[in-house]
Length: 230
Length: 230
Image (tube, rainbow over all chains, first blue to last red):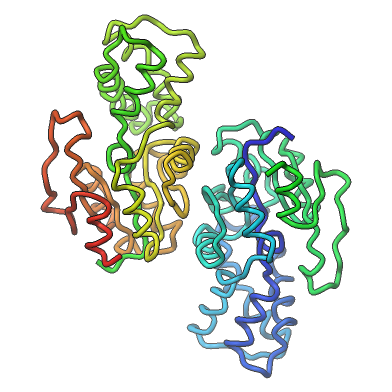
C-alpha cells in the first residue's frame, strides 16, 4: 500500500463503545438497570435510525439527535422508565465519553509520524473532538458523516476523505473493525485495513479474525503501525 | 468572554505568509526575481480570485486552484516569465509551507488546555493540515472555507464553526489579525479577538494596534492565552 492518509472508523475500531456507554448508564440510571444490556439495546437502534437519513426520508441530522430519539425505546427494552431531560442529555453525552482500546493511542501515535490521520465516523464532529480530547487521540483533522452530510455507507462519506485530503482514493486507507464498512470503502477506491476487535460486542458475536478482501488484517493499531513500518 | 472554542484566521494571524512564500519563490525562481515583491503580487490577487466564487460566478474550488490560476499574472508583475508546470505546482505548495509566527505554537499550546482550537481559514483542508504538521500547530480539528463550501467573509463560513462545534455562536471566538474578518464574524454572533501583526505586510501598511470593536485586542497568541487565563 502506498498510502498518504489513514482514516478510521471509531465506534468499535478505536474506542470501546459498549463499556463506555454501560459505565455512564450505570452512573446515571443506577444499579437497577442492566447497563450492558442497555448499551446493546441502544446500539441496536443505531443502524435503523441512520437508515431514514440514508434513504432520504429525512434530512441529515448529527448522531446525537438520532441517539436522543432512540433513547426511550432503548430504556424501555431494559425495563427502565422515561428519564428527565437532563438525564437524557447526559446519556447522549455518554457517546462522547468512550475510552480508546488500550492499543489505540500508542498505535495512532506511531502511525502519525508517517501518515495523516483522521476519524471517518458516523459520530458528529463535536462527539469526535470530545473523544479525541478525552482519550488523547492524535488526529490531524476530523472527517466523517457530519462533514460529508451523509452517513456511512453512503458513498459521499468515503469520497469526502480523498477529496478533502487532496489524495487519490487509492492513497487513503480506511481502518475499521467492520467488514461492511471496508467493502463500501473499497467500492469507492479506498485501500482498506481490517482490525479484529473480538470484545466489541461483549464477546457475542465474535467478529471474524481477518477480512480476506482487505489489503491488511491486524489485531491492533500497534500491529498496524508495525505492518506499515512505523 | 465565556467561550468554549477558539477558531483562527491563519494567513497573517498564525503563519507568516509573506516570508514563507518569498522563501519558496527565491528557491524556485532564483535570484533574478524579487521574491518579496512576488509574494505581495500573488497575495494581491487573493481577494479578487475569491470574489468570483463569493459572487456565485463560479462554483467553490479550493484555494490551491485559485492560487494556480493567479500565478501567471503574479509572475508577470515582477517580470518573471511563465514557469513549467512542475515549478508552478511547487509554487502553489509554497502556501502549504509557511512557518508560524514565533508566539503561535506556545500560545496555542497553552490555549488548547482549556479551549477547542481550529483554523477557520480560506485555505483548503489539505493546506491547513500541511501547515499544522509542518509547524506543530495543535489543532483539535480543521474548519474553514473548504468544509463550509464558501469563502470568508460569506456568513456560511462563520456559521459552520458553532454548528459543527455544537456551541452557541457567542461561545465561539474568532481570532484574527484583520478587522474585516472580525466584523463579519461578529455579524454572525461570534465573539472576536484581534491580534496585532505589524510585520504581516512587511511593515507597509502597518495594521492598527487594536480593534475597538473586538472583545479583546492582543499583541500575540501568548498574550491571548494570558488574557484568557491559560
